[in-house]
Image 1 (spheres, rainbow, N blue to C red):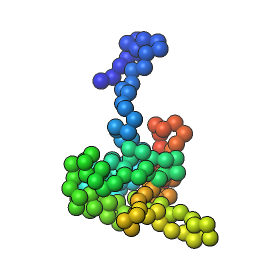
Image 2: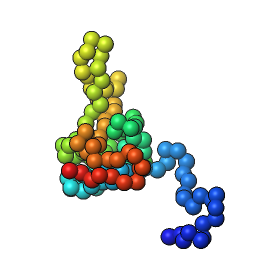
Image 3: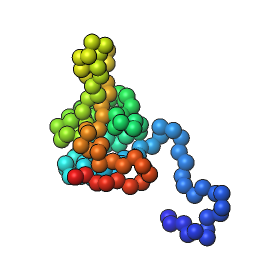
Image 4: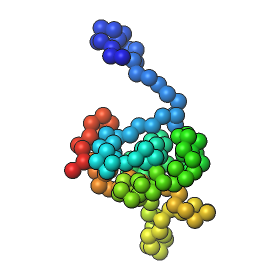
Length: 139
């Protein structure tokens, strides 16, 4: 519902406020890249769950498959297929860490699977962090 300037009192914030970690914000550049890649419904749901916390370098906060399933209503297999689709379409990649001796390793959990993902550099380059409202769009 639009709000006119004269309807907003000075000092009053007309925007909705939500508790931390209870909503997702998907950058427009990411939405455009997902649309161009023709991501299916499982991929969209998984990405929305991952976007609850995005760091400034494009990495997602750690989210378990069980948590994604609980938040989205997807089954474990649907979450797995959604993650596979996002990886296969080049939208997310595992986070890579350097060891003390300089080797590059994937961020792994104690069960051996990838624990943390990030948005690919190509897609992240299309996201503008200056104002949070505008993007350059994918190239």
